[in-house]
Image (cartoon, rainbow, N blue to C red):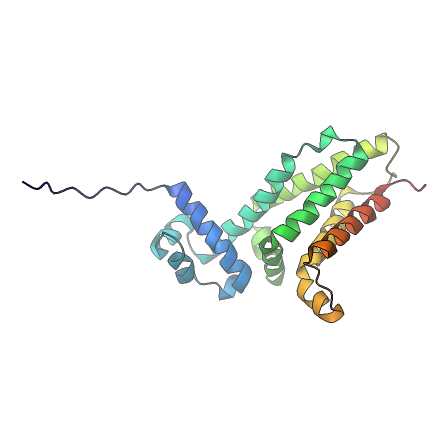
Length: 215
């Protein structure tokens, strides 16, 4: 007598579903922008239906905001775990700049999403307390290193942590945001390992010269 086996009930894991959706949506929004990305495409590349995506995130805008918050949370979480207080101020600043340069170079979707948000005049950033809090933590990180450097007599006085953060972000961001045009105009592949290594070192030295006391 044959035994008819019952179908195994599928276990629903909401957190895994959300992560899967956000991972796929990150690529879609980075490649196609807010207007060009399609929820149908995102659903087709995940194990979730379009209806379930809307259940989790409300609508397309809600999904985009979740993606944006996630990429900011990811970089700030790793940065917070690096423990810059373990190193002397100059070394801590060097490591912070290197980390941010490497992050942008290795996570180019982050740069593209920030560029997209600028196209939309930071409309979603303005409405996100999560991203504002994460950004405040980034400034606090710079400020803590800078203040220790001033107290140790190696960094010059009178600088604002926000300005230092701006310099680091500008140099690290440009290396990705203008990668295609710069390479085409000057026949220089900024993605090549040797070139990226040289630019990384240049950015570190530029920031250290900016904050350090003159010799």
